[in-house]
Amino acid sequence: MSRTDEVLVAQVLEGDRCAFNELIGRWEKGLYNFILRMVGREEDANDLVQETILRVYRRLGQLREPSAFPSWIFRIARNVSRDSLRSRGNRVMVSADDLMEKGAEQILDERIDRFQRTAQPDQAAYRAELGEILAKALQTLSEEQRTAIIMREYHGYSSAEIAQVLDIPVGTVRSRIFHGLRNLGRILRRLRLEERE
Amino acid sequence: MADHCTEWEERLAAFLYGELEPAEADRMRAHLDRCDRCRNVFHEMKGTEALLRRWEDVDSPVRHMLADAGESRPAASSRRGRSPSAARRLRAALPLLGAAAALLLLVLHADFRKEGNRYSLSFGGGGREEGMSPGGDPAGGSTLDEGVPLALPVSAKRVDYVDRDEFFRSQAELIRFVATLIRESEDRQVEHLSGLLRDYVKEVEVQRRDDLGAFGAKVDSVERKARAEFEALGAAPLEAGDADGEGGAK
Image (tube, rainbow over all chains, first blue to last red; front, side):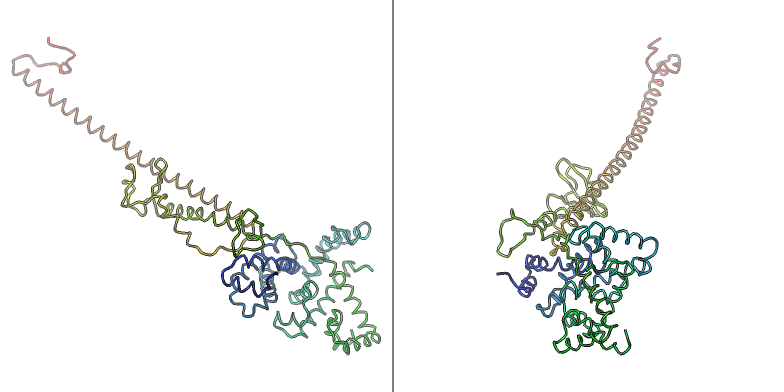
């Protein structure tokens, strides 16, 4: 029978590093995908996952409620991602206008046209390029909106749970998701990348 | 979206994700039936959300140091699941880390030399000259095979959590670091020995000059003495050079 996160946390705190391995193994994929979508770049995501795991390891003793481990590690992952984005400064942040100018629109249009002509949505190449485009589009959102949408869309957190993780009112979370999705929709429409029925 | 619809905004997101209570969801549906603008906004959101959903999770390429399977590792009571073969390698590398620290000490503060298979180590400023004698200075030096410097860094209790690639990168860096230290240490030894050799050559040169001077003085003294004795016998004064004996008795 597999051990619960709570049990594993207790064992890690007793010095069992293998328990930490098992614990992180459960959440590693989720952390990676969360961070990848937050920062939009694979090369950064790798490093930031490591940093997150290190922070988790070092601060595990500060976790007051072991049952809240999943929320806690996502909070750390969010902070790590946010710190990284801040340290990047504005030069890497992508604005909607940035996405449009300097031929980016043309490049993306060509990709989209290619998908529509030749690719089926279930093809790996389509998914990879779709991910790349969505990563760029997500970067146009504020970090707050992006966090809320990613947690809601990809990690199954309810608005109430997101509110708990981020320590903000539920209404704020829903507002961020609402405005984030609308902003994202505008960007994607400008890229003519809309969901095909 | 009309101003009077603002109150629905937050609930639109909740409705999209099925978070509204059934009664509230019914009210939302009724509102969407009546309000074209809210309905359009909702459909746009739904389309965007559907597109986002197509961005599937990928496997994490991150492999931390405990993530490798280690079937060859002996089972331990506390070990389950994936075994930390990389951790084992990291632990095995600790003596190397110790060597790096020891060599750092050598470069910064200590004197290092190799004699056969034995590495002698002298700390501080003393013992350079003493170190030239075989075996070094037992009072001022230590040896690597006694484990003194190697033991220093092994006291580090915690090993940071790193992935395999980072681990190997760090190991490669460590090896390069140690190699650099060794190279620098060797360079220092070559420089040190060259200096000593130069000093020795100078000393020999001085000694040779001194010896030649003393020998010349001795020869002069003998020559003067011989000349005086020869003149005391009433013989004619010798020409210079005859004292060398090449002329023999005339």
